[in-house]
Length: 337
Image (cartoon, rainbow, N blue to C red; front, side, top):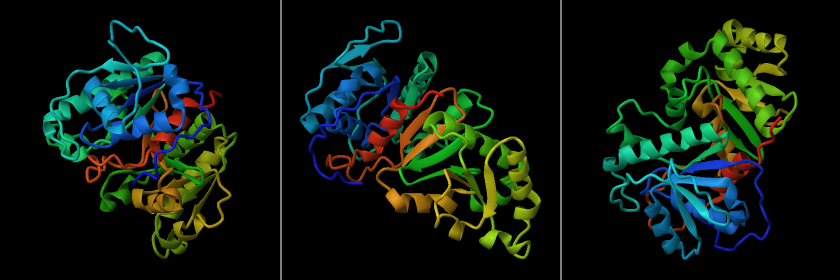
């Protein structure tokens, strides 16, 4: 995920919606890719729409490393003196010492607290949330049940059902199951789950991507979608009834189609995938740099980079900002239907 060079794109991007940003792991590339996205794409024209939740020293240090001049304005939860033409930072002074490329569990509290502050601010201000990359393993050393942004935010807001979506300009995929062992996937595939995820997918594509009556392809679970029961029965007993229920409720869903051929003729607005590695290799191969992570089902739209903390290059300032830019663009220009 190295950068292609440091030249500014002169096309002016002006956001319609407010955005709250959490930078993620301080030892990773979160601050770097965010500031590059701001600088390279002329997002300085939309600074009044952006609030970053972080310890200000993280931004200040990275501005110096990138040789970028940008005025910052520090605010607090009680004193929201926002300023135009500045990067407004909600001051979360809990980050200890950190070294780029060397994450520490000592900062796990900071990572979680600044994410929580950002999410609550987004909910309060009816803004979108953009999240930078985190190191789940480091956080899990202190927060044993922490499995990532999506589940954490779902629990924080007691969301009944959420959908993890990966999107780029070429493809959109939603996941019925996410970060669970492959051995547990079949028992997690239920008709109710198919319906809930499919409904969220259709509503999210409409609300956040502006696609009216989105056409959704539901993938099968087994090779060749089970070959009419020869290689598995889930398509007949679970997935097909789930699709029928979606259609009865006005959702334009079809399938189940076998995953090995479903993506060839991409005439669908979205693909509902049964498990993580069924569709993510496809979308990331098509356009890894511009792929972003999107969460449907929260009180606000959440978008995120679809790469990790990149600790191996975090101290080199060569990380690509493109995924962060795409996450910001969707969050800032969501069509409010």
